[in-house]
Image 1 (cartoon, rainbow, N blue to C red):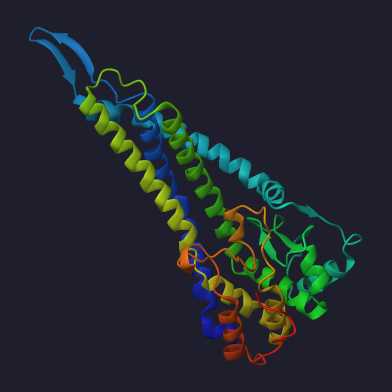
Image 2: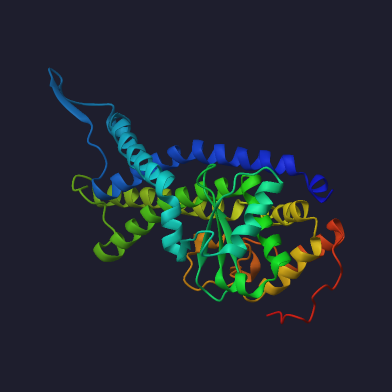
Length: 340
């Protein structure tokens, strides 16, 4: 089987490990961000001062003062992050729908798509996810959700209108495979965390642009000391922002190969997946979708600088893998749909 050859269990284990690492590493990164923002807005802490018979004594110096207020910074940073994560946990689907323009649909509204999705789930013992549609002529789809009962499969109107039943079934099976492989949970967690880091970094850089580079509230430090504070704070924020970008692009493109393989396993029809990918190619761009959401799509035509930071493997390569490992028909559908 194609799935056995590509290491399904290792892929799922890696996704689970990445999810745990993101959950564990994010609080540390957020505390550092809180410290940097504090330096830029309030300034460095003053050492505690008291008088003795020998004169004025400063306890612990600046480092001691910073360590003393670190618990308060950590509490605020983690508290705000926890609040955001709780909101995202319960309302992430509404936020994703708002960002992409998707709307939930019922069986009565989309009987054809609903029946295909339901039949796939019943035949493989899966709980059926919710179904949503984006009213756009683009050909694309994605799955979202953090746990069973929250999962949603979203398709575009263009995909529904342009694909036949077998091709549409293959796309739905692809998205169900993302759910089965825990790709969806990993992507949503990454989007939530990266969004917080990006938001904080953007706010700080906008503040600097409008109000200038000065450590707010740090009236006590000399010019040289204040400059070092700004450099250190900005360095932390830049590193955090760079790590956020790396997190986005470290989510292996292999997930798309695995989901293609999963579609073949669910439908036993590699040619349907190939034909669907050929039709999607060149017609997948959803103009108003945020970049973070595009990583969830079955195809992301925006590949970044020379393809170096592509979130998806090229469709021709995916088709080649389906032909080589899943028994797909070479050249299937070539010429029937113009490739852009």
